[in-house]
Image (cartoon, rainbow, N blue to C red):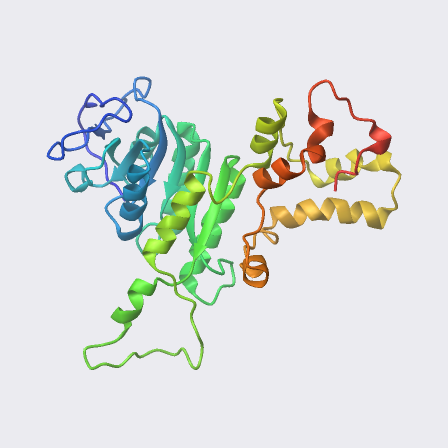
Length: 324
């Protein structure tokens, strides 16, 4: 995570221009009243770039040839990666964060260190991202995040997710479990792991695997935006309108369906909004021996499924499927 200093903007290298290994990354430091107009655009801003999770993500982005801005407290500790520049900022400094995020398309946000005030810090960071014009936030959350979670830190993640949802930007949450890397540290010097876990089990995950998953999402390999993919395939601008519940019921009246059926159509979207359909399973691969299709693959296999969306191919409303 990063902290802020006071100085001027150092000239940034061109995107993708490799630097000699002994040259430190260009540094962006906030000073009061500074303009963000001349700050270059980057596809990714990575927080926690000197930490265990953020540094792994940053290294993998660099390995894939991506340009990025590393948000750190101390630029002298920023990893030297090709295509990367450093920005000094921290979640406790909203203006410094806003400058650090200026021109970034996607913000990879790790959680702040454990703190009684962590939710407020997260809220400030999200608000700074919105003010900076960030288009998407990918947040590293925690398994079972909810307001009633037994693990109290998971409640912080839920409150952060809720604020991101309400921010209006596109988002993705990756809910990892306890880190596999931490399990050895739970044993004391006397060789005993002590804690009130009873006979419970934990599905721990390695930080390396988490970083791989994060980068897959950042680069669009582990997820996709439906409207973007449909736009790409059909050659027209497909959009999403986030209806209110009243709007959703009203827009489906013309289908003449009974109330219980319309309610089913509408609540299918409500369940998505509630995160109840955001569950990824390995069941298909485990049971069939092959990976499940994603949307791009499905559209290649069944192009007729979106034939009604192609320009010059108007929809016969009577033959169209109900929007549920």
